[in-house]
Image (cartoon, rainbow, N blue to C red; front, side, top):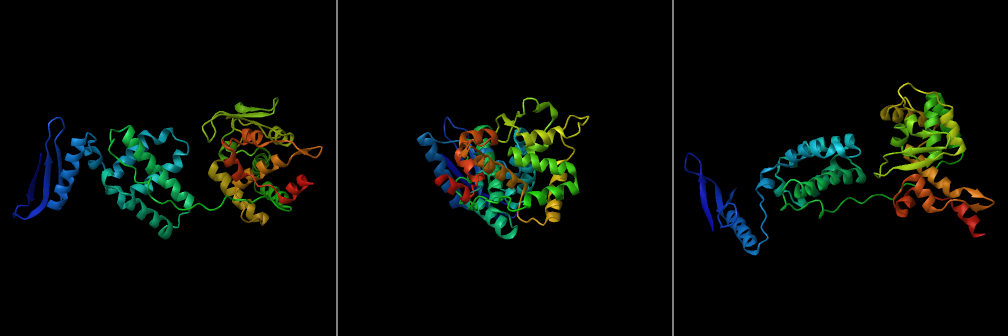
Length: 339
């Protein structure tokens, strides 16, 4: 049975209303509200759920702030995730937001929608960046409900409208861009040119290339074994004759790493090389697009050699739909197939 009493300050002025729900077989539930009507409405919901056998204890989710939950998430969950460094930056941004001072139980989809609006209109974040931010909050609520004993939590991200993603990129090397880019890379650092050539030959991701060690490179068998790729599965990347030549020409380092570059250093050098080459709008990831497309264009005696499943095995795409986003075939090449 619910009881509601006024909470007063030292001068006897009502500053809130405390509601208690006491029912046999359930722990006592206590919560304070600004108005008596809010307290009565809350008590009615709790008693109804207890009667119907669907009640879940909300006390922990009501006293846990989003900021506190994010700090716990960063400590317990983040270290085991890929891209932990980038997500740690996202978490710091969430903790700095006013929403971090609200309890998990009180956060609604409207609250998330308001943050999305700020991200896009005030902070200029791209749609995909916003989605990555939302993914962290969504996963946090899932973890809280399944692993942290907050079974009553609903996920506010599930019911919010996400920003629409732009169409997949279709940028490929055109004209003499490849030669100009490689020349500019050599001028910046010969190692950068080798990295770019390997990307075009293998369709490997930037992170996969820069994390290479000689221990996973088999030049005799012409294959690179990636023990832990982005999709969570190991894969073997075959090396073309050109890719093999690139690796054989490299000096061996004492630390076993293939490259001396860091992620940040390589990224800065690539931007510099593009500027020197006078090339606009070509991201490093576009080289992966280029490589995947070229694999589909390989011919032997006028016949296309590789099918989608073979290319997917090389690039590491789990579905053909994902592969399609990264593969852009030239219309003139398709016309040749039509006869």
